[in-house]
Image (cartoon, rainbow, N blue to C red):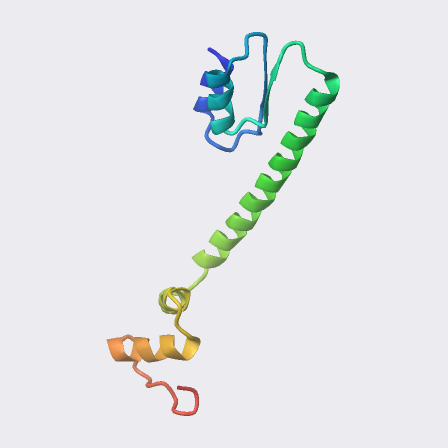
Length: 120
């Protein structure tokens, strides 16, 4: 199995990789980069280039882990919402103000209490 094949089989949660190849060619390096490689180094390469690729991979991996952790936290918070809160959230996400979302819920018959005039 080639490095490109292995990279293709990852589920997107694998750390970024830098390819080192003795027979680097443009199509192969292009495919690697499109699939998320940090760098494609052809032998012989300079140690500084490898170290730069490793540092870039570590930064990218750290940032991806932070994003995944934040997303998981948002999913957990979303799971705690009641059906009514989810409906209001979808209306607010669509661009409505809180009071417009309340009025829309009332007009649909989903909210038995009309919006208060001083807040509508």
